[in-house]
Image (cartoon, rainbow, N blue to C red; front, top):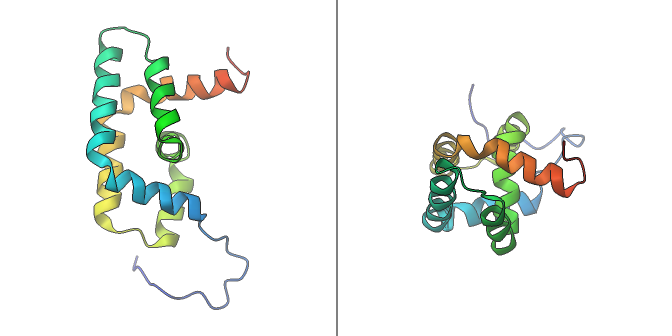
Length: 123
């Protein structure tokens, strides 16, 4: 398992990593302290049994691209990992994403329920 950069020739069929994802990763890393603070507050509310839907919606309205990345962290793990590899994302950013996933894993189902509800698929 070696990481190679620049080996693009002969890979025309390989999908490119969306620029929106790269910007979201950069934004997540740049604003990581604020993102972690916001999710610490949401997790604290969740731990008390409070409804966190409004907190999640508020975060999403402030940082929609980062919210989508967070959804992908929990629900499109393999696909996201593949895109991180293709884009050559630095280890520090990967570590911060992994830290977020571990720290806020209790919220994964709540994030999923919010998305499903908004898509009209609430159960």
